[in-house]
Amino acid sequence: MLGGKPIILDKIKTYFRKENSKDFYTFFENTFCPRKFSDITEGTQYHYRLLGKILKEIRPNLHLYDIDLNFIQKFDCYLKEKRETGIGGVWNKYKNLKTVIIFAKKLKFIDSNPYDDLKYVNPKNKTHFLTQQQVERIKNLELNDSLGLTRDKFLLACYTGLRFSDVNRITRKNWGSRMLSVEMQKTKEIVNIPLSKNSLKITLKYQRFKKKDEPIFRNVSNQNVNKMLKEIAEMAEVDPKLSFHWSRHTFGSLLGQHNVNAFLIMKLMGHKNVNQSLIYVNSNKAMMKDIIKSIVNKG
Image 1 (cartoon, rainbow, N blue to C red):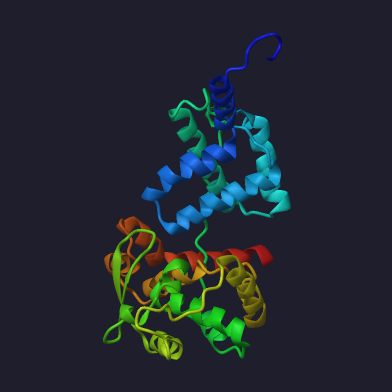
Image 2 (tube, rainbow, N blue to C red):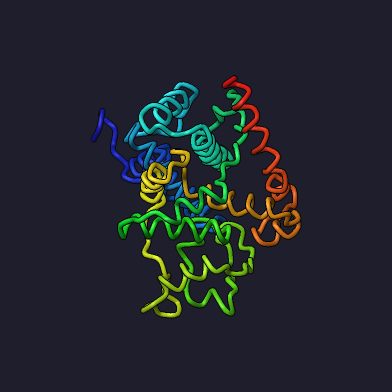
């Protein structure tokens, strides 16, 4: 008896099921992720899992209705101040959280979406890349095993345009006669890239004693690789903001500087739209403008 009324077990269970359904992490892990992950790549899955981890750092107990404008502002401050996340990273986490909220509203878990009242602009990403001389400086560094592995992965990506996830998945099965054939994890596009002398030297160095279907590189997290690239950047006297993704832009930029046309760049890099490739055709002009601008500002 409770308050003079009989307790009905089924009603209690129903009540707690409803309460539990309002818990953000229960919804996120048991409803959103299983349904969403069937349509997205492992790399994107990783970013959603990271979102869940960050939200737990901010508030371990979080209900769907707790996510309002005030919470989003705290989320923004935490990303920028505590985690020192860049503008692009903040944008991506906003985008992912918004996707989760839209999904919850669509399934009637919540009635409104706080992002409907929030205006935020996608930052224009500046394309960072290295010059041929900077790549050579990195190549010629004397490094220990860990930094050497990071440097070699980065250089192979500079020579092939492969993303971090694709470099980590390379096996002996991926190359034939001086040609690397890879299905890109992000786009599922197959790219066939001629292996230069430098890229061939790196792949041969790491494929020894590896089984045909075994990745040739030891797996190291993207975060740790980028930390080590900062050390490498300092030693090579290049921009200290260096990250692994610069390698892909470097590949495209070097192709453009050697007068490779945009359609061939598109094919080599697995772009779906030639407009993505045109930035590399014009990268040399952009570089010259930046140099002139810096000279004028110093004068």
